[in-house]
Image (tube, rainbow, N blue to C red):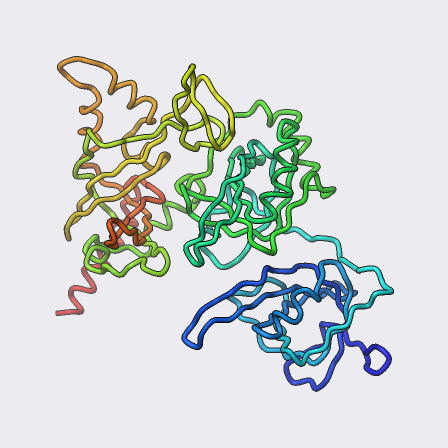
Length: 453
């Protein structure tokens, strides 16, 4: 192929060119996935191809082409590729910096360059500090993170809803100089291979750099690896070396806090003035959050908090996962695979809230519930254990009622007894103290009412 066609750099390709040949190395290879749509079932997989100049492009193959080239493409090897097509990249699914994406069909040509070593460019990271992950939650973009490994769980088997298959999963907890921790979920081979390697050296608190992870909102903020994610242990990059120096000198003795949706949004006070709706807008639209969580801001008063509900759970002091009482003494954490003499209490609270349009129930996790009630779950637990006519536990809950709060909430759909129900979860809590901003919103509402009449 190289003898008969001129090899072109990736940067020169566009959808309007005729025949071309490129010489590229496979720098990322996705899994062969199956799908089902109106036209039937099929399979697909992606590779990221990099040329000698470091330019990258994503190539996608469907059905016959996917089956033909899946075994052909091997990570790190060099290939001549021709007879593919290009189109403008879909920004929603774009994984590399290129305006175009490539499609290879069963007539495309892929020839391995066996005589050459791969020219893998140096991995470039664009690290996001843990406390700045908030704006990336549930977005289509992927982020890079670097952190000290604080905990590595054992491998779990998770059953996928899409195809009912089980896949191995392992959670690692990392921390950085922001003094925040976040859980990263590794799946498949990452969980069983590099995850096991991390478990074996967890007592040495290694540094990990992770490229291309998704940011979700599970229990506040969480990270999840995907098929193209790359995990490097103790990489020789300046950010990792700086983090290691900080941790060895002071970080290992510093108290760390788990990242929550409320604690990561430095613009929380500003965000609750956007997408402001009444409760009736949410409760009268039962389909909200059916496909993906919908986010709104509301101003509400707490109507009541039931004192007899399960207000909290016993949590591991390392990873915040649920613990069980040991037969002998202490508490067993299945995630950390260890026994501890003490545990923390973390809120999983439900409260009824109201505004001028109606009322509904909201769920609040630890940090957000602390702001609503005014104390930690451990402190409230101590009040519950106190006896007396006053009942300080119920008094504390009553005092939390009828106070106004600005809440950032997510609306999703949960299935219970084969019935879909709306779930409203608090993501940030802000006191009502910016009266100028509140007055501006009222004036805008009045203007709308006047215009409507």
